[in-house]
Length: 374
Image 1 (tube, rainbow, N blue to C red):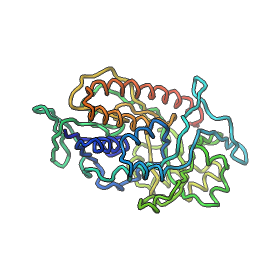
Image 2: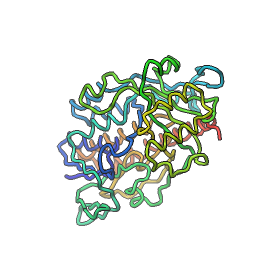
Image 3: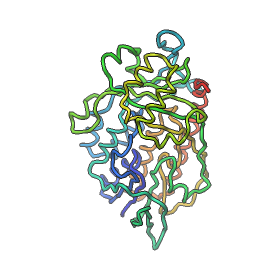
Image 4: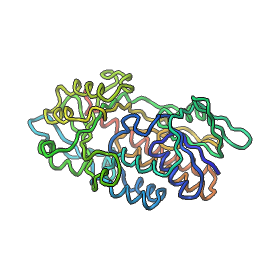
């Protein structure tokens, strides 16, 4: 059995680790030329769903390394910047009165990805173009003219998935109209002194200013560099929430220092403490995100090609479920392949579970848009 995985994001790498743990050959193909070719995202919220998936898929050595570098426990918070100080408000809730995100931990996406890259067969610089099913196998074709042949091909290539576009050309992703310009600022005593102490225990939305923002610490239990990893240290994630009318989508392809300049321009009128945090950011770590949400699709014909994570059920980040759902997909698919469970059973479960979270996240995003000026 040889599984071809398109995309070296969290879901694809978790799947590869789970298959490898089960003694199944897996090769990951990633379009980026190197692991650090671009800013590899920010802190992610990992709750019990993601934690179970990582425990299932990672060997003990890597799971323990993940746990050692996991950050502080967190909940969702809301602050107002309408006055001189950032004032904590009652936390946002879901339409049914529940909490916006499940309790969990802050985790550096960069560090978790670096951990899951270890020990795998990962081919960088391989941009997938299309596949063909031939003679009971599937052949992946890449832009450099190379091919790879396997027994199963998994699209783990994110919201713009080329695998999904070929397999399910009718599947749609709706633009929510929301854009993020985000970055990381190293944590110093001076920075922590300017921000509310309760922020240590939560990811927070900040309203009452134009534009609104998301902020949250990444405070490692153990510094990654002390364990042979590359993350430079604790940081504050900040994200400016704005609209597609105010930020050209071409910004997605700009280098970090150019995005930092855009962030500073957008932040001219935000709370002074938050603008100061943006000014002190690592410019090369800034990135741009387009918030999209997938439209649920009916059951499809099961073949030797399947999908996981954002490649099929992309969702806004308002419920903190994107990474957790992708990791859960990876664990479920690894178990199905290892146990010989029909692929259709994995797809039915993944589709129901994934699109339930898409609906919940989309509802939460509509609530959040009330806090986004413009």
